Image (cartoon, rainbow, N blue to C red):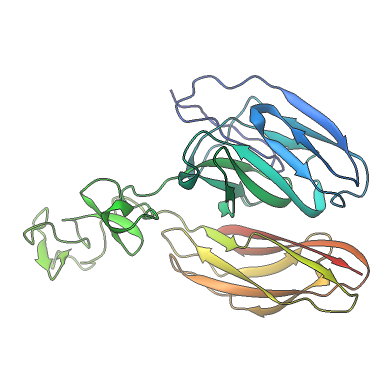
Length: 329
């Protein structure tokens, strides 16, 4: 029996229970008081949170717990148990490292985080033999698992050749795994097609249909989903009224449908200390696999640690967020 996933608040770090698990783990928690000098907490399931010196300005009780609940709508097959970090809403002046343990081939795994709109995006992770590490500027939803790829109408996997898709009947076409013989898909061996379709060149078409050449609509494509890279950027130390080097953020649509018109915003604690210098995303509609870019500079107006977020939103498409940080001197 598959584990059902329920709802919890947004600001929690989570590692999802392995597929096929029938009973959730009991609630457990570990707490530690961490101040400006930094420290670490090792919680249930071996998840470790490391907070560097300077990330917090005052002593704060950090709690790592394993709630008796899960999460639906994941873009990957999860590999471990659920873990939550508190206090909810806590943000940091410097990147915090979260180590997520695993017992699989690290090259097959990725770490994902949810946006406030509920979409999931993949994080840049350091892959180690026994754990994956990510750096974040705030507590959010996270999980560690294998991406769903290579299945019919799903994105192609990262392998090359026919290995991009599961099974001999599928082939990677425009980053989507499709079968042969169906309308809009490749012809099968011997230039044959299914259901009375004819092979035109290398594609199966039905000349009697007005939408000939369009893949069978019986299985809907994956919905639009925005992702941003990098998803965390520390601009370092910059003189007050000075300007850092520009950083380019690339926004991509990883879904199978087009997004709505995009909107770009700087939000968070110190948005006025970060400047958008170039933006090809605003008012743009991204087709599947299409990208746009946003360039940002850090220009502190006063001394001290500064944080903000770059939010790119689309309906459909959800929200893609990059955490920004820097220090003015």
